[in-house]
Image 1 (cartoon, rainbow over the protein chains, first blue to last red):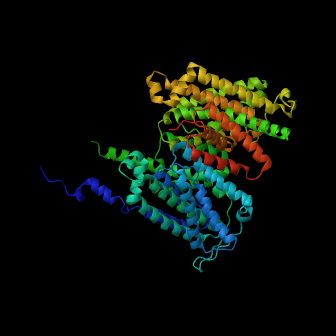
Image 2: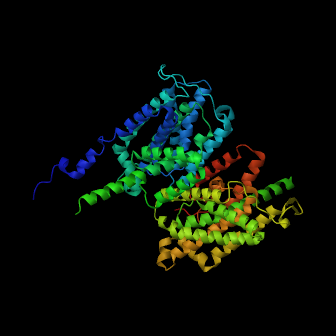
Image 3: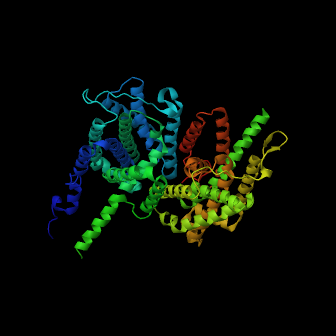
Length: 337
Length: 288
């Protein structure tokens, strides 16, 4: 009987230790984002919206894709972040861009922690309803607190001082905003990527796949879920804060069911539970929406509905999952066994 | 004073009855199949459209239109159930949510194309318009008609649920699907019939409620949260629960809209959250 192969030669062990390594293609999305900056200077407004959506979808991926928390109310945290930045700036308390984002993250995280503490005891329909109601509650509160939040009209005319005291935000030519948001997105992405490949992230996947077994191996399931939900809320809050800064206004649309449903659709379209699903989904959805939704709103809605039905029935992995199916098929074709 | 209370109770109950008629099917199908069906409001909307259009174009009466709406919506929804829904019974909630949201979008777009985006008024027969003197208070005849219809339907459903063989089969399947299946109950057939029946009820609710809820392609999304709140507060698979939850929410909404026009909904959301935290299975649901 031969001695067992050393751990580093075992293909399974190699796959496990190597999975967090940087792939060759991973700088590609960032290079494309930079290329967009130089190639389409006239569409940078669309670009900023796109980058913010990617960040928002990424935050949802952490909760839904990795930890398996099915929520319909993720816009609550986006809106909390947006309103934090908006209210701080509008009432003249604080408006320095980067520190405002930390405030947005802190407020969203606090709401995520407080609601997660009670919501995450439930599952299924009850959890769906509770996340939905929490978001509706915040929306109503923002609608009612007119003196602070501007009510139905929202807060307009938020002034953001130059970044680092040097680079001014120009609402007509959002060059600075684009690069600023790209930078924030990169930082948040590196954070999320590190997190999901850490032992903590692995245990989240374990909870998603089999909660009972994770209980049985002694993992603190509820604590992990709450921590994950809080972090996810904080990232969503940063996305919301960026939205408020880029648009220089905040309104109730940041808190609505529309936004929550859209981000869910985007994530699922790209493929959830994989880091780049947020990127692919946001690009595919936003580009299609940009061209179709204004020209043919009804056809767009019909197509969107049809796409969701088809994804739910046949392509659970979204676009990236479809890519996997095709590459597997090609691989099989090339190497017939 | 008494008149005030009575008229508020009547108005709230009329709204509650519409909520009940629409939501009862959702509660039973969710309890039976564990399927998160966000497209239930879309079937109510479809039924409402069938009822309005059949009255307008075929000249049928109100009662006949309601019957047509029930039958057609039930038939259409059964086709959907057999062809599409049944593939997702074993899938996760996320897939069910996405699938049904997709269906809602398709219904909205489809009705916008076929009928148009504007509100469709329901022609109510002359006998049901005007006021009715109840002794203590005068109130709108149509609201009283809604309450009577709602109670008749509730009693009918309760009898059907508790006293017929089919009702017993449904109750058995809600309690324990595997056990019911191994006793030889044809679950697939049970699902399809219940789903069709529930959607048909929703269609009637859509037609009856259009008088004060309106009927336009956004209906399916606008009131979805309300239907879901009623179902989750009442408890899945419980007719009794949906009935009381509908009345509570109907009356509460009516009273709050009158006295706290701003922020009344806030109170309903808070109450729902508190209740679901206290009893995740709803008022009359069975703990899982």
